[in-house]
Structures are given as C-alpha cells and as structure tokens.
Length: 107
Image (cartoon, rainbow, N blue to C red; front, side, top):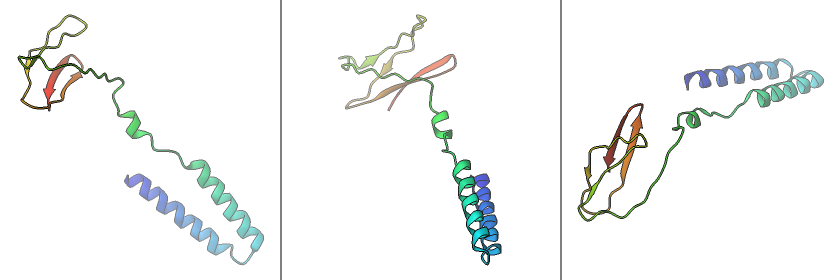
C-alpha cells in the first residue's frame, strides 16, 4: 500500500512539474501531456493480489441434519475425522484442510 501511494505521488509530482515547465509552449505542452497520459495508461495494472490469496479449490455439500446431530467426515484417503456434534438450530459446519491437518468447524 505504501509503495503504491509513493509511486502515485511521485508520478503526480513529475506530471505537475512537466506541465508547469511546458505551459508557455503549446506544442511541447501538448506532447508532454500526451506522453504522460500514454505512460500512465500503460503502467496502470489491476491489483490481482486478492485473487491470488484465494484457495486453489473449495467444495460445498448440503445434507439433512442427522437425527443424532452428529456428523462424521471420511477423507478420500479413508481417514475418518472425529465426529462433530451440531448445535441446536441452523448451523453451517465448515471443513478446513491445511496440508495434512484437516479439521471440521461448526459455526
């Protein structure tokens, strides 16, 4: 964030200085403004960092709450996770898997 602010302020200061320095010559002023606009348009990029931090994959499953309110999860490799007791009312259990340590959370 700080890097972006510093870059923006620096570009604005340079553009202001060039505009002030070329005010008296209309042709030079036009060329300077055009070059500045082309430069800024070419250098501006979308900030994709938020998309890069999303998980590679996520899955959703919807199922009827069991009468005993216990859910168990069996992983593709056959590992059974400890059962989770669902609270009364509407709940949204989520499973998070980081490396080899999957856990089920009820929220």
